[in-house]
Amino acid sequence: QVQLVESGGGLVQAGGSLRLSCAASGRTFSNNVIMGWFRQAPGKEREYVAAITRSGSMTYYTDSVRGRFTISRDIVKNTLYLQMNSLKPEDTAVYYCAAGWPHDYSVYDSYAYWGQGTQVTVSS
Image 1 (cartoon, rainbow, N blue to C red):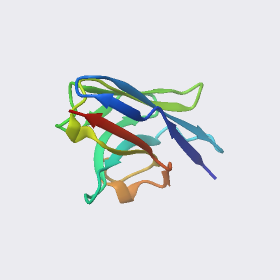
Image 2 (tube, helix red, strand yellow; image 1 turned 120 degrees about the vertical axis):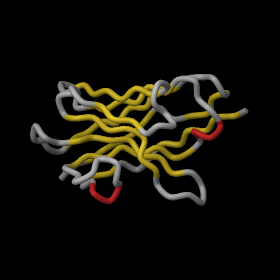
Image 3 (tube, helix red, strand yellow; image 1 turned 45 degrees about the vertical axis):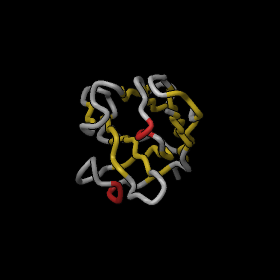
């Protein structure tokens, strides 16, 4: 089985930065695994944020975070990261990492494994 554990969330003022981490354990992923970040604000659907291939050679972002967020991964440490800069109040949500072989990397229910989430709160 796979365990994904997120960390790094917290409270930050608008314009600030946070770096989220997601440590994976339990199995060695195949070369074609995709890892992603999603977020869910109160009363809203879970929303795709970013995704990355195992090698890190390809990254994908939703329009609202492109240019502000950077997804990366350390294969040796088996850890996924999300560097979030220029944070806005609308970025407030619980952030989840996911792993799997999705038919569409932006569709949350196509991922096989999920973490428990970490809260990010951006004050205005």
